[in-house]
Length: 246
Image (cartoon, rainbow, N blue to C red; front, side):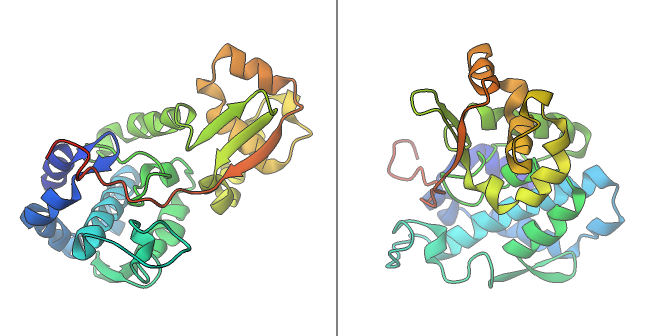
């Protein structure tokens, strides 16, 4: 798969060599061209999910390299941020499966219908603050394993979840608040009984990260005195250019 070759070549630990990808973008453009000819709605569920995750991630890469290098002026976001490209998520549209779709439409309409909040950490938003962009494409046959790895990574990344025992705080990614109804629907009922008095989104977050917590972390949370805070999302471009390497 061309996308596998692209990700393996240009992605390292969630960061991207955007300059090199821009210079050598032929494979990316070829993959993007194939997206419009696909008929994802006719595929089995796992095939559909893998298709849309891969399409979203590839389209983010395209959007970045189309505007690279990014040095925006808006004070609302970091200067090097995909958010400095006007309408990058909500207005710029792409041809996928015979439709014109924005990145936000793919995330909020298409991915949402699969009722699996792990997907929101599987998409790379071209930023430091989101889920880690993988260096391999999503594959239908191993999709559940890949998504389980995505969820497990959340527990190990401070941008996703951070427990501060000194301040008695659990700080969670803003992604949980953006898509909280999806997380609540999928996980609020799965939290341990000790958290029964907690809000639905707190229970959903605890269910999401709980399986990979350490004993110390679990003991801290089960005191049930912590407060929830949301981490300000870091929209800084996940750019490896100039950081060593290519």
